[in-house]
Amino acid sequence: MKVLLVEDTMTSATVVMHQLEKLGLETRHATNGEAGLAQFKAWKPDLILLDVIMPGLDGFEVARRIRQLEKDGEWTPIIFLSAKTSDKDLEHGIEVGGDDYLFKPVSEVVLAAKVRAMQRLAQMRYSLVVLTRRLDEANRELTRLTSVDGLTGIANRRCFDETIQREWQRARRNRLPLSVMMVDVDFFKQYNDGYGHQAGDECLITVAKALEAQLKRPGDLVARFGGEEFVVVLPETNAVGARRVADATRRGIEALRLPHAYSKAGDTLTISIGVATAYPSPDETDLAVGWLLDCADQALYAAKNGGRNRVAV
Ligand code: GH3
Ligand code: MG
Ligand code: MG
Ligand code: MG
Ligand code: MG
Image (cartoon, rainbow, N blue to C red):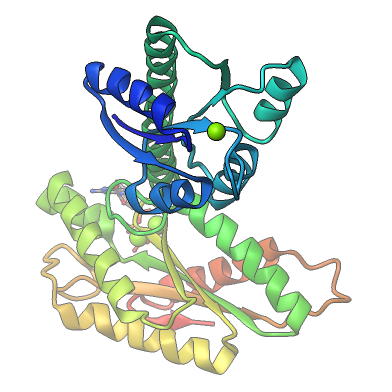
Protein backbone atom coordinates (compact mmCIF):
# COMPACT_ATOMS: atom_id res chain seq x y z
CA MET A 1 0.00 0.00 0.00
CA LYS A 2 1.31 3.43 -1.04
CA VAL A 3 0.68 6.14 1.53
CA LEU A 4 1.16 9.84 0.82
CA LEU A 5 1.65 12.16 3.78
CA VAL A 6 0.95 15.83 3.10
CA GLU A 7 2.35 17.82 6.04
CA ASP A 8 4.18 21.14 6.21
CA THR A 9 5.64 20.78 9.72
CA MET A 10 8.83 18.76 9.47
CA THR A 11 8.87 17.55 13.09
CA SER A 12 5.42 15.97 12.96
CA ALA A 13 6.06 14.70 9.41
CA THR A 14 9.18 12.86 10.57
CA VAL A 15 7.29 11.15 13.39
CA VAL A 16 4.37 10.04 11.19
CA MET A 17 6.65 8.88 8.36
CA HIS A 18 8.59 6.78 10.85
CA GLN A 19 5.36 5.20 12.16
CA LEU A 20 4.15 4.43 8.64
CA GLU A 21 7.42 2.82 7.67
CA LYS A 22 7.27 0.64 10.77
CA LEU A 23 3.91 -0.64 9.44
CA GLY A 24 5.74 -1.77 6.32
CA LEU A 25 4.00 0.77 4.06
CA GLU A 26 5.51 2.43 1.02
CA THR A 27 5.53 6.13 1.86
CA ARG A 28 6.11 9.54 0.35
CA HIS A 29 6.04 12.97 1.91
CA ALA A 30 4.81 16.21 0.35
CA THR A 31 5.57 19.41 2.25
CA ASN A 32 2.65 21.51 1.01
CA GLY A 33 -0.74 21.27 -0.72
CA GLU A 34 0.52 21.88 -4.25
CA ALA A 35 3.20 19.22 -3.91
CA GLY A 36 0.58 16.87 -2.43
CA LEU A 37 -1.69 17.30 -5.45
CA ALA A 38 1.24 16.73 -7.81
CA GLN A 39 2.13 13.49 -5.97
CA PHE A 40 -1.50 12.40 -6.05
CA LYS A 41 -1.52 12.73 -9.84
CA ALA A 42 1.93 11.29 -10.52
CA TRP A 43 2.29 8.57 -7.87
CA LYS A 44 -1.39 7.52 -7.42
CA PRO A 45 -1.23 6.67 -3.71
CA ASP A 46 -3.68 4.22 -2.12
CA LEU A 47 -4.15 6.40 0.96
CA ILE A 48 -3.57 10.07 1.73
CA LEU A 49 -2.84 11.44 5.21
CA LEU A 50 -3.59 15.12 4.94
CA ASP A 51 -2.68 18.01 7.22
CA VAL A 52 -5.16 20.91 7.28
CA ILE A 53 -3.23 24.04 8.19
CA MET A 54 -0.62 24.64 5.50
CA PRO A 55 0.61 27.70 3.62
CA GLY A 56 -0.88 28.01 0.11
CA LEU A 57 -3.51 25.34 -0.50
CA ASP A 58 -4.84 24.11 2.84
CA GLY A 59 -5.81 20.47 3.42
CA PHE A 60 -9.55 21.08 2.88
CA GLU A 61 -8.85 22.60 -0.53
CA VAL A 62 -6.50 19.75 -1.45
CA ALA A 63 -9.19 17.19 -0.58
CA ARG A 64 -11.80 19.09 -2.59
CA ARG A 65 -9.53 19.14 -5.65
CA ILE A 66 -8.64 15.46 -5.34
CA ARG A 67 -12.34 14.54 -5.34
CA GLN A 68 -12.82 16.66 -8.47
CA LEU A 69 -9.85 15.01 -10.20
CA GLU A 70 -11.10 11.50 -9.54
CA LYS A 71 -12.99 9.98 -12.43
CA ASP A 72 -16.23 8.04 -12.04
CA GLY A 73 -15.67 5.04 -9.81
CA GLU A 74 -12.25 6.13 -8.59
CA TRP A 75 -11.63 6.70 -4.91
CA THR A 76 -8.50 7.40 -2.88
CA PRO A 77 -9.14 7.31 0.87
CA ILE A 78 -8.20 10.54 2.69
CA ILE A 79 -7.54 10.78 6.44
CA PHE A 80 -7.11 14.27 7.84
CA LEU A 81 -4.49 14.75 10.55
CA SER A 82 -5.16 18.15 12.06
CA ALA A 83 -4.52 20.48 14.96
CA LYS A 84 -7.94 22.01 14.25
CA THR A 85 -9.90 19.91 16.68
CA SER A 86 -13.44 21.33 16.89
CA ASP A 87 -16.50 19.31 15.87
CA LYS A 88 -17.10 21.87 13.12
CA ASP A 89 -13.58 21.29 11.69
CA LEU A 90 -14.14 17.56 11.64
CA GLU A 91 -17.57 18.00 10.04
CA HIS A 92 -16.04 20.27 7.40
CA GLY A 93 -13.25 17.79 6.68
CA ILE A 94 -15.74 15.02 5.96
CA GLU A 95 -17.86 17.46 3.94
CA VAL A 96 -15.03 18.33 1.54
CA GLY A 97 -14.30 14.66 0.86
CA GLY A 98 -12.30 13.30 3.79
CA ASP A 99 -13.03 9.75 4.93
CA ASP A 100 -11.75 10.19 8.48
CA TYR A 101 -10.48 13.05 10.65
CA LEU A 102 -7.92 12.56 13.42
CA PHE A 103 -6.83 15.15 15.99
CA LYS A 104 -3.13 15.83 16.41
CA PRO A 105 -1.11 14.51 18.02
CA VAL A 106 -2.18 11.03 16.82
CA SER A 107 -0.91 8.07 18.82
CA GLU A 108 0.96 5.36 16.94
CA VAL A 109 -1.67 2.77 17.86
CA VAL A 110 -4.59 4.90 16.64
CA LEU A 111 -2.81 5.74 13.38
CA ALA A 112 -2.05 2.08 12.71
CA ALA A 113 -5.65 1.07 13.45
CA LYS A 114 -7.11 3.81 11.24
CA VAL A 115 -4.79 2.89 8.36
CA ARG A 116 -5.85 -0.74 8.69
CA ALA A 117 -9.53 0.22 8.67
CA MET A 118 -9.01 2.22 5.46
CA GLN A 119 -7.10 -0.68 3.90
CA ARG A 120 -10.03 -2.95 4.64
CA LEU A 121 -12.48 -0.50 3.06
CA ALA A 122 -10.29 -0.12 -0.03
CA GLN A 123 -10.10 -3.91 -0.32
CA MET A 124 -13.86 -4.24 -0.10
CA ARG A 125 -14.33 -1.55 -2.69
CA TYR A 126 -11.88 -3.32 -5.01
CA SER A 127 -13.85 -6.57 -4.67
CA LEU A 128 -16.96 -4.65 -5.62
CA VAL A 129 -15.30 -3.22 -8.71
CA VAL A 130 -14.23 -6.71 -9.81
CA LEU A 131 -17.71 -8.07 -9.11
CA THR A 132 -19.34 -5.27 -11.12
CA ARG A 133 -17.03 -5.96 -14.04
CA ARG A 134 -17.92 -9.67 -13.97
CA LEU A 135 -21.60 -8.79 -13.78
CA ASP A 136 -21.29 -6.56 -16.83
CA GLU A 137 -19.59 -9.37 -18.72
CA ALA A 138 -22.26 -11.87 -17.66
CA ASN A 139 -24.95 -9.44 -18.75
CA ARG A 140 -23.39 -8.99 -22.16
CA GLU A 141 -23.13 -12.75 -22.56
CA LEU A 142 -26.76 -13.13 -21.51
CA THR A 143 -27.88 -10.55 -24.06
CA ARG A 144 -25.90 -12.40 -26.70
CA LEU A 145 -27.34 -15.77 -25.69
CA THR A 146 -30.92 -14.55 -25.73
CA SER A 147 -30.60 -13.22 -29.28
CA VAL A 148 -28.61 -16.02 -30.89
CA ASP A 149 -29.90 -19.36 -32.17
CA GLY A 150 -28.22 -22.20 -30.30
CA LEU A 151 -27.76 -24.51 -33.30
CA THR A 152 -26.70 -22.19 -36.11
CA GLY A 153 -25.23 -19.22 -34.27
CA ILE A 154 -27.24 -16.73 -36.33
CA ALA A 155 -29.95 -14.46 -34.91
CA ASN A 156 -32.88 -16.25 -33.33
CA ARG A 157 -36.63 -15.72 -33.47
CA ARG A 158 -36.59 -13.34 -30.54
CA CYS A 159 -33.99 -11.16 -32.20
CA PHE A 160 -36.04 -11.21 -35.40
CA ASP A 161 -39.23 -10.17 -33.57
CA GLU A 162 -37.45 -7.18 -32.05
CA THR A 163 -35.76 -6.19 -35.29
CA ILE A 164 -38.89 -6.40 -37.45
CA GLN A 165 -40.89 -4.30 -34.96
CA ARG A 166 -38.16 -1.68 -34.87
CA GLU A 167 -37.77 -1.62 -38.64
CA TRP A 168 -41.52 -1.44 -39.16
CA GLN A 169 -41.75 1.64 -36.95
CA ARG A 170 -38.74 3.19 -38.66
CA ALA A 171 -40.23 2.50 -42.09
CA ARG A 172 -43.51 4.12 -40.99
CA ARG A 173 -41.84 7.22 -39.61
CA ASN A 174 -39.62 7.76 -42.64
CA ARG A 175 -41.97 6.46 -45.36
CA LEU A 176 -39.48 3.78 -46.39
CA PRO A 177 -40.21 0.40 -47.96
CA LEU A 178 -39.58 -2.70 -45.87
CA SER A 179 -39.23 -6.21 -47.26
CA VAL A 180 -39.05 -9.66 -45.71
CA MET A 181 -38.14 -13.03 -47.17
CA MET A 182 -39.38 -16.30 -45.72
CA VAL A 183 -36.91 -19.02 -46.59
CA ASP A 184 -37.76 -22.72 -46.23
CA VAL A 185 -35.55 -25.68 -47.04
CA ASP A 186 -37.14 -28.02 -49.59
CA PHE A 187 -37.86 -31.61 -48.63
CA PHE A 188 -35.95 -31.33 -45.41
CA LYS A 189 -37.94 -34.06 -43.72
CA GLN A 190 -36.60 -36.39 -46.41
CA TYR A 191 -33.09 -35.05 -45.79
CA ASN A 192 -33.36 -35.98 -42.11
CA ASP A 193 -34.89 -39.33 -42.89
CA GLY A 194 -32.20 -40.11 -45.47
CA TYR A 195 -29.05 -38.76 -43.86
CA GLY A 196 -29.99 -38.71 -40.20
CA HIS A 197 -30.83 -35.93 -37.79
CA GLN A 198 -27.20 -35.13 -37.05
CA ALA A 199 -26.46 -34.51 -40.73
CA GLY A 200 -29.67 -32.49 -40.86
CA ASP A 201 -28.37 -30.25 -38.10
CA GLU A 202 -25.07 -29.72 -39.90
CA CYS A 203 -26.95 -28.93 -43.09
CA LEU A 204 -28.98 -26.25 -41.28
CA ILE A 205 -25.76 -24.70 -39.97
CA THR A 206 -24.32 -24.63 -43.49
CA VAL A 207 -27.46 -23.04 -44.94
CA ALA A 208 -27.63 -20.47 -42.11
CA LYS A 209 -24.00 -19.43 -42.59
CA ALA A 210 -24.44 -19.26 -46.36
CA LEU A 211 -27.54 -17.07 -46.05
CA GLU A 212 -25.74 -14.76 -43.68
CA ALA A 213 -22.64 -14.59 -45.88
CA GLN A 214 -24.75 -13.66 -48.89
CA LEU A 215 -26.61 -10.82 -47.23
CA LYS A 216 -23.80 -8.43 -46.61
CA ARG A 217 -25.67 -5.14 -46.59
CA PRO A 218 -25.50 -3.58 -43.12
CA GLY A 219 -28.98 -3.51 -41.60
CA ASP A 220 -30.13 -6.74 -43.26
CA LEU A 221 -30.91 -9.44 -40.73
CA VAL A 222 -30.91 -13.19 -41.25
CA ALA A 223 -32.60 -15.11 -38.46
CA ARG A 224 -33.70 -18.66 -37.83
CA PHE A 225 -37.47 -18.47 -37.71
CA GLY A 226 -37.80 -22.04 -36.41
CA GLY A 227 -37.07 -25.56 -37.65
CA GLU A 228 -35.74 -25.39 -41.23
CA GLU A 229 -37.24 -21.97 -41.85
CA PHE A 230 -35.27 -18.75 -41.98
CA VAL A 231 -36.43 -15.18 -42.29
CA VAL A 232 -34.59 -12.20 -43.73
CA VAL A 233 -35.38 -8.56 -42.96
CA LEU A 234 -34.48 -6.14 -45.74
CA PRO A 235 -34.89 -2.54 -44.54
CA GLU A 236 -35.26 0.25 -47.10
CA THR A 237 -35.77 -2.33 -49.84
CA ASN A 238 -38.63 -2.09 -52.35
CA ALA A 239 -40.34 -4.99 -54.15
CA VAL A 240 -37.94 -4.93 -57.11
CA GLY A 241 -34.87 -4.95 -54.86
CA ALA A 242 -36.26 -7.69 -52.62
CA ARG A 243 -37.06 -9.86 -55.62
CA ARG A 244 -33.48 -9.45 -56.84
CA VAL A 245 -32.05 -10.37 -53.42
CA ALA A 246 -34.35 -13.39 -53.18
CA ASP A 247 -33.35 -14.69 -56.63
CA ALA A 248 -29.66 -14.33 -55.78
CA THR A 249 -30.20 -16.05 -52.42
CA ARG A 250 -32.00 -18.99 -53.99
CA ARG A 251 -29.28 -19.36 -56.65
CA GLY A 252 -26.59 -19.05 -53.97
CA ILE A 253 -27.90 -22.05 -52.01
CA GLU A 254 -28.37 -24.03 -55.21
CA ALA A 255 -24.78 -23.26 -56.19
CA LEU A 256 -23.49 -24.86 -52.97
CA ARG A 257 -24.57 -28.17 -54.52
CA LEU A 258 -25.12 -29.78 -51.14
CA PRO A 259 -26.09 -33.38 -51.90
CA HIS A 260 -29.75 -34.21 -51.28
CA ALA A 261 -30.37 -37.58 -52.90
CA TYR A 262 -33.86 -37.76 -51.35
CA SER A 263 -35.14 -34.46 -52.71
CA LYS A 264 -38.01 -34.58 -55.18
CA ALA A 265 -36.77 -31.31 -56.73
CA GLY A 266 -33.39 -32.60 -57.94
CA ASP A 267 -30.35 -34.20 -56.31
CA THR A 268 -29.03 -31.17 -54.40
CA LEU A 269 -30.40 -29.11 -51.53
CA THR A 270 -32.66 -26.20 -52.51
CA ILE A 271 -34.74 -23.56 -50.82
CA SER A 272 -38.03 -21.85 -51.57
CA ILE A 273 -38.55 -18.19 -50.79
CA GLY A 274 -41.64 -16.07 -50.22
CA VAL A 275 -41.13 -12.32 -50.53
CA ALA A 276 -43.31 -9.48 -49.32
CA THR A 277 -42.84 -5.72 -49.30
CA ALA A 278 -44.68 -3.05 -47.35
CA TYR A 279 -44.72 0.72 -47.82
CA PRO A 280 -45.99 1.78 -44.42
CA SER A 281 -46.65 5.44 -43.68
CA PRO A 282 -47.08 7.43 -40.46
CA ASP A 283 -50.89 7.69 -40.94
CA GLU A 284 -51.10 3.93 -41.36
CA THR A 285 -52.63 2.53 -38.19
CA ASP A 286 -54.50 -0.59 -39.30
CA LEU A 287 -51.71 -2.55 -40.93
CA ALA A 288 -49.31 -4.17 -38.50
CA VAL A 289 -46.12 -6.06 -39.07
CA GLY A 290 -48.02 -9.34 -38.78
CA TRP A 291 -49.69 -8.60 -42.07
CA LEU A 292 -46.32 -8.34 -43.84
CA LEU A 293 -45.26 -11.72 -42.44
CA ASP A 294 -48.57 -13.29 -43.51
CA CYS A 295 -47.97 -12.03 -47.04
CA ALA A 296 -44.47 -13.52 -47.10
CA ASP A 297 -45.83 -16.78 -45.73
CA GLN A 298 -48.51 -16.97 -48.42
CA ALA A 299 -45.86 -16.28 -51.07
CA LEU A 300 -43.74 -19.08 -49.64
CA TYR A 301 -46.71 -21.40 -49.83
CA ALA A 302 -47.11 -20.46 -53.49
CA ALA A 303 -43.41 -21.12 -54.15
CA LYS A 304 -43.79 -24.59 -52.61
CA ASN A 305 -46.92 -25.33 -54.63
CA GLY A 306 -45.25 -24.02 -57.77
CA GLY A 307 -42.66 -26.79 -57.54
CA ARG A 308 -40.12 -25.57 -54.93
CA ASN A 309 -36.59 -24.20 -55.56
CA ARG A 310 -38.20 -20.92 -56.56
CA VAL A 311 -39.12 -17.43 -55.43
CA ALA A 312 -42.69 -16.21 -55.20
CA VAL A 313 -43.94 -12.71 -54.43
P1 GH3 B 1 -41.18 -28.69 -47.76
O1 GH3 B 1 -40.36 -28.79 -49.01
O2 GH3 B 1 -42.63 -28.63 -48.02
O3 GH3 B 1 -40.74 -27.59 -46.90
O4 GH3 B 1 -40.96 -30.05 -47.01
P2 GH3 B 1 -40.15 -30.31 -45.70
O5 GH3 B 1 -39.90 -31.74 -45.55
O6 GH3 B 1 -38.94 -29.44 -45.68
O7 GH3 B 1 -41.13 -29.71 -44.63
P3 GH3 B 1 -41.68 -30.29 -43.29
O8 GH3 B 1 -42.22 -29.07 -42.59
O9 GH3 B 1 -42.62 -31.41 -43.58
O10 GH3 B 1 -40.45 -30.86 -42.51
C1 GH3 B 1 -39.50 -30.04 -41.93
C2 GH3 B 1 -38.52 -30.93 -41.26
O11 GH3 B 1 -37.48 -30.18 -40.65
C3 GH3 B 1 -39.14 -31.75 -40.19
C4 GH3 B 1 -38.27 -31.58 -38.99
O12 GH3 B 1 -37.92 -32.80 -38.38
C5 GH3 B 1 -37.03 -30.93 -39.54
N1 GH3 B 1 -36.38 -30.08 -38.59
C6 GH3 B 1 -36.89 -29.01 -37.97
N2 GH3 B 1 -35.97 -28.48 -37.12
C7 GH3 B 1 -34.86 -29.22 -37.22
C8 GH3 B 1 -33.58 -29.20 -36.61
O13 GH3 B 1 -33.28 -28.35 -35.77
N3 GH3 B 1 -32.67 -30.14 -36.95
C9 GH3 B 1 -32.97 -31.09 -37.87
N4 GH3 B 1 -32.04 -31.97 -38.17
N5 GH3 B 1 -34.17 -31.15 -38.46
C10 GH3 B 1 -35.12 -30.25 -38.15
MG1 MG C 1 0.28 22.23 9.10
MG1 MG D 1 -43.16 -27.64 -44.72
MG1 MG E 1 -39.16 -27.33 -45.69
MG1 MG F 1 -40.96 -25.70 -42.99
